[in-house]
Amino acid sequence: MRREYELVRLRREVSGIPKGTMGTVVMVSAEFPSKSLVDFPDPEGKEIRVVSVEDSDLEEGETTPTAEDLQISASVWDVSKYKE
Image 1: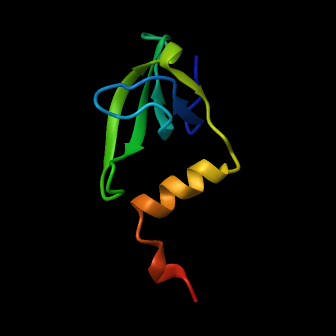
Image 2: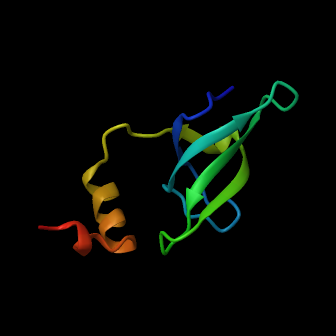
């Protein structure tokens, strides 16, 4: 069973969300111990999708972003407004 607010990464595509996408567990339930509700950003980084995901389709997410995560974030989010 996952923990609420745990960072996770998809092991495969789920509900149109690409493999490797990072998300945050927002709800776990003893009634459905093999599933978690997870928040994922959409490809444009503008919305959050909440999806029920089997725990077997999740792996522990990185707490420190990898170089690949940073490249994905830079391509998805408009980070130019944060540069000095």
